[in-house]
Image (cartoon, rainbow, N blue to C red):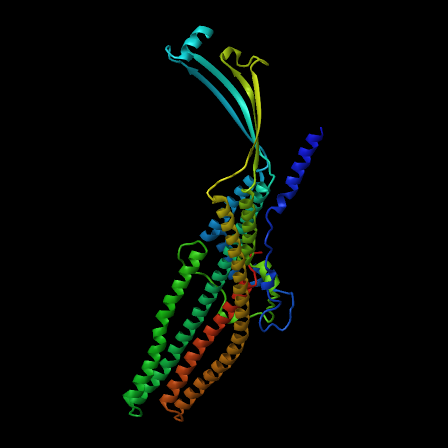
Length: 469
């Protein structure tokens, strides 16, 4: 009895030591700064907590995003990968359950008459063949002494969560691409209107100059320069129409549709930049961003693999049991209890000489874990840089937009004044052409700055971890 207790205490000690054979490496939080560059406060309020449907107020854009999240092929593949990982997780959770198998067999053997088996069979059984009928259930179970099963389950769970984070990353990427493509489409619409308006404006200047040329007031050079300015704007029209169609095709593909026209009911000027865009603190970003979270989960997988590699140094305890019925005659197959049989086996396997394979695998697992730590730090650094970059873009583009907007208004007024002065003979055609050219370029630039501003806001939303909730 005392010996039995000693064995039990030994098993308990082995089980208790299962979590100590390999020490996990913790997530290196020292690489996460307390605040972003040029951040005035460490406010924990962040736009990442805003649902994407509330972050994008434009109804047409919301419909496009909603369609893309359902029909986009990358999104569909991400969902299927998640389903595969879920099946692997279910299998890993059953690792502690013994494996059970059913085996039913029947055989008939005719030994050689000149062999020992043949002569004995004929002498003792009175037959020239041997029949054997068997049905049994086998059970096999490996004791989780060193935490192998626990580490397999932990690795499978972390892998499943990584796949879930990958799906979130695909979703945030799709939302960002759809929003930026939609903004680009509105920008091109605005530039097309500017070009068409400039063509109409210069058309009146060309007609006036043609009349003055006929009257001998100006030379043909004046008319030609005005026509050249008109053709600059006219040349932009087919180019912008081409770009619009290409963006529509790309947006159609993002939404899982064949290339087609994208209906929109808003203009670029209708879209407003939110006055407040809090980014929160880097610690929140780390927990919100799917790509950074995936790197953190990769460390959990690496810890589990190190534990599995370390467990290979220690013996494995396998217990098997088999029971069923067995008979030489089919008529006696289920003659109970005479045909019953059973066997229980316990085996401990201890690796000795494996050509250093076990230690090599263990060392590689530790090195891979060190790589995972480096990759996590790298992802944090990259994410912090993206947030800081988006923040400074928004700030500086806001200043650029105000200046460009004022410049465009001034040049529009200058163009009107030049037209009036030219018609009254107080300005020459060069002043009119210069004013029209400057106005055209300023309005095109203003639309570009507005697009960059909207894209920077969308990028900040993605960078801080928004868009997947």
